Image 1 (cartoon, rainbow, N blue to C red):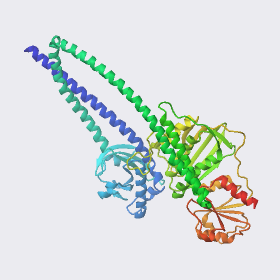
Image 2 (image 1 turned 180 degrees about the vertical axis):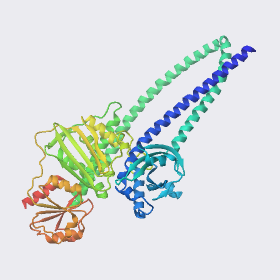
Image 3 (image 1 turned 90 degrees about the horizontal axis):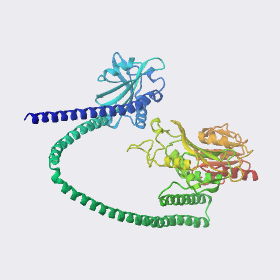
Length: 600
């Protein structure tokens, strides 16, 4: 009896040690995971709070010192602006507050959908009496204070960053992230580990007793185990036979896949070739210039699609190995122009300017893989158009020592710092949330980066901010021959009316010191254009403005050119008086235009 009691105590002690060990490990894991999440959240909160002074007017907190200092309209503007930055940064709240007579008052904040539904939108000079003590301490602190606390709005991780206005008034810039889900998830995981450990113990205890009984009966079970061993061997032989059959079936499936790819290649190529053929038939019917331009774009798109289909099928047909380059000699300027023209309709839809600038020294003919390099251009320019709401895209091409360099500038929204490190990862986007505004697979940049590396170069993000992004890529592109692309040399006097910085910079770079004027100057009574042979007017000008300029020109000595997006034509009264030049404007088109003028 004494021996049995001793064994029971030893068993109970072992269970206690086991439970304590599980609690210790689970607690340490919970604390480490929580600290890891909070460290990542704190970095994002610090960046967001530091950026608040750049969001609000510079002297905002010099003024916002009493309930009537800020107008309702200004407060609503700040509310929308803070909400926009909060959404783009994947945060919950961005706000600032001041302390007057020992009380906290919000001076700027964002709102959420839940705030609107619950009638909790924080406006200017909303009090916050329920704030934790850290909110009051932050007004006199020397460094940011991090707080984890709950209030009427939820459980938040908060940074409270003491700041000083230009006039020396103290205020606090703060950023919140709702961590209710994270906290609940960690607690659930902690309890799950404890529960599973207890269940495991409950399962293991009977097994321990069963093992002891089995040990006592082991001799009698040896015969049964021997029989089981024979059964296992027989089962292994059966599995081996099944594996051989599965291997045979896999080989057969591979043959069927190869046949499928062959058939699919035919099925895809045939309709695309049909499109190209019908386009050619349309061309032969005799079309006007605008229709001819549209058919050329359609034909070019079909050829690009056909090349892409061929490339996909070639890659899919290879079971092992990477991308295979198909080097060809291409005419550099024509190749680049064809790519830019592909985006004519997309740029026109958003009324963006898209220009191509080719530097001195670029060979007239190079050797590249045109299909794969085209993918890089299409991904970069396509992304630039997708994420640019106004302004445009500036594409620059240069060449040095056998290496082609491409730079794509845009005036879009830029890429947040928290997303820059993962944009080249597969299936990653700037915004990975389910509610993101822009669609896509997140494969464009990773594929483009791989193509550039296979072509002996690289792809990188040069810079990105709220003024736009700049991507650069380098690929090996040996020159074929010694001829270079000729720069546009014209002595014609040119005047350009545009409000687009993209077009201003492009015309200044490509023409010989043109006169640049804004579109509103067209209405000036003092406007004199006698000194200019060529007058370009951007699409932002109205038809009345075109008529006004056309009436001032000598049609025999001067030419008026309207820079129009695809799909936008001229009214009948202006046809014959105004020449239409479609965007995107190509150097070759501009050369032809000025050459015709010179010959005339």
